[in-house]
Length: 267
Image 1 (cartoon, rainbow, N blue to C red):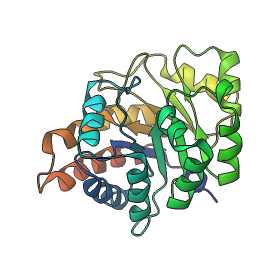
Image 2: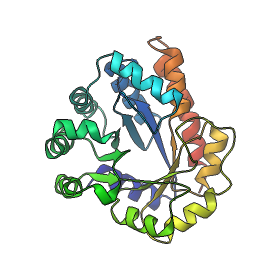
Image 3: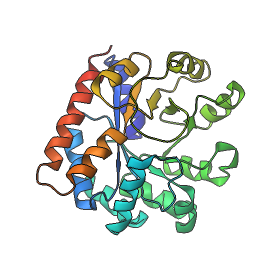
């Protein structure tokens, strides 16, 4: 069974909410990415999202753009990310989603990339700029490889389109709680409860909510409405500030642990 599907099944059976953590692959380098993945597994992270660095990360705010830049500067490429996932698999079975732009997959060869991703231990792909209406053979390749295609629902997505998106999604639906790009925010969107409820009218898949969640208090609030909470920029910001410091892995992991404690306290 796909690790994402199994993880959400386990969470549901224990009446627990999930924590999804995003980091930029190769920031500050791929060895640290591997160590962070293993450390996150130890502190209870349920799913890891690895951002594959790209020169034009249109869905990302400044924090994650800078992370992508650092990843490119450290020599991180899609094949290198896949090799790192394979190394993570030697120590951890944490479910892994690649957060990626379609151009990188297209250049590699869509079928070849998906096959190699599955072989290396990737569980799902979140292709930021690929709408399901234009996915073509991508969906078939993903199904054949046993990977979860994950799509975004935004606050502005009409209900008719929500139906289309969730019907093409597997693993979980990613709800972007705010308009605009990724980044830390001071408050939670007031439309969050209504939108999660609307999505759940059309699917039994878990709904994970991200974009703008910055601290344990916000994570706990979001977890009261969602099946999982996604935190990215607040983690990436700490990685960026600490860089290759010997304390980076420990300090970032402690912050992530505090997020997990908050999320897991919600029934």
